[in-house]
Amino acid sequence: MAIDTLEYVKKLEAAGIDRKQAEAHAQAASGLIAGQAATKPDLDNAALRLEGRIDRGVARLGGRLDLLTWMVGFNLAATLAVLWRLLR
Image 1 (cartoon, rainbow, N blue to C red):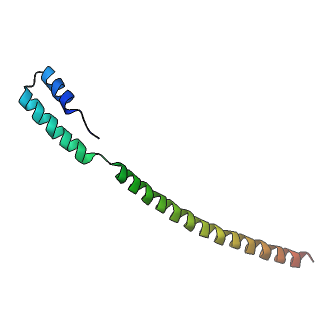
Image 2: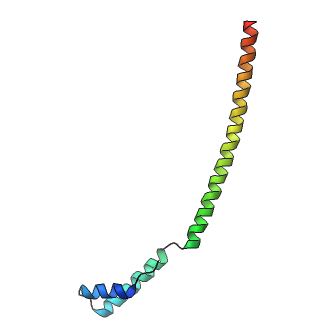
Image 3: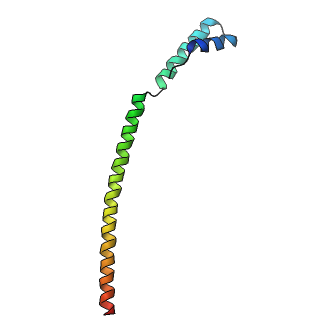
C-alpha cells in the first residue's frame, strides 16, 4: 500500500507544519506503512497454507467418520443379533 506523500505534505503544511518537517514526516510514515502492508504474494501464500490446513482437517475428519460409521454398523449388527437370539 502506498500513500500520496505530496498530498500528505500539503495537509501537514496546511495544519501549520513547515515544509521540511512535513516532508520528513511523510517519508517516515511512507516507510513504516510500506514495511507493514501485506503484498499479494503474502496473501496468496497465506491462502495456500490455510487451504492445506483445511484439506488436512477434512481428510482427518473423513477418516474419523469412516471409523464411526463402521462402529455404529458393528454395534447395530451386534444389538440385532442379541435381540434376535433373545426373542426366538
